[in-house]
Picture 1 (cartoon, rainbow, N blue to C red):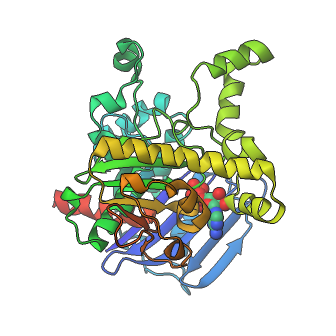
Picture 2 (cartoon, rainbow, N blue to C red; picture 1 turned 30 degrees about the vertical axis):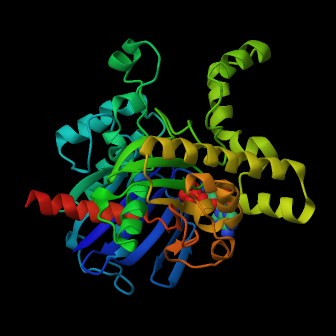
Length: 400
Ligand code: ADP
């Protein structure tokens, strides 16, 4: 079965086509700069890579181009686009309505549209992607896989904010959490690796990329996560502040005669690592620290890892028993420094870190704690696209 996975942003479409009998990626790529004068599209069939800079005026043209790549007479992977059985759509916000992936019907699409006020930056692009893909792949089943769905098992005392109840009932203000597909994927992979049944598996997952979040997983279900109503809460990220005193925006607006929209942009785009040291690239920050002893870079590394460490402690308490702590995504998979700093000094919690193992480089699952560690510390590569494809297949099978 061929499944196309699409992740539509406001000016980009990330795509991967899988043969789900083997889970092999047949074609993948990224269409960027949609709507700009010059476009940028990169794609590859296996190790054959291509780049084109043709203008891509809108998402429809972008997706038509992807459809053409699929049936390309020379490199194409199918003869006719009707061979795509399912299109899995990464959909950011499923609100309280979606606890799992869903076949996209009229009602489901309407519900995703209703979610726009709580996800104004993400859901509109996802909706465009769905509508255009339905036009271009009319024979395929379209499935929405939500970033928020995995976290819908959180108890109310974890997802509610201590503000007047009316904001929850009327405006749907609560913790939703994001990166659900990634947290679920790495947790399932590590449970399999450790031979622990997933419904008995307790883990703390750390998705540390440009956007970052952690989840507390009990018996295979999310019981808490660091991102909140929006992706701004929780960990320090590339450009997002994560947790701050909620009174700070009010103070800045008053002092700077600024406005709340501006402060929102600053907290989302100019803060986090970038706000602390001017860069949101962890590689560059590490280099500045190790080669020049740059104090801002040092502080950025310390603040970033200290926030992770605090949440490890919090989630150990929330879970009671923890099988594994799992690092994933760009920073989590590649930065041995951040992993080491985040786990240092946690022996009393049962975490005995192995510095030598931590320096090993591999693209598969790696254990970086010592044998005697009660809690295993693991590195696991994430693969959100594969998880979306797997869930799309599951939705189809459960509907047959
Ligand atoms: P996104 O959230 O955009 O998917 P990624 O998961 O790709 O982000 O993570 C991007 C982050 O990972 C960047 O801060 C980048 O510097 C960091 N990163 C990537 N490779 C390395 C590496 N080898 N060492 C340290 N950090 C890395």
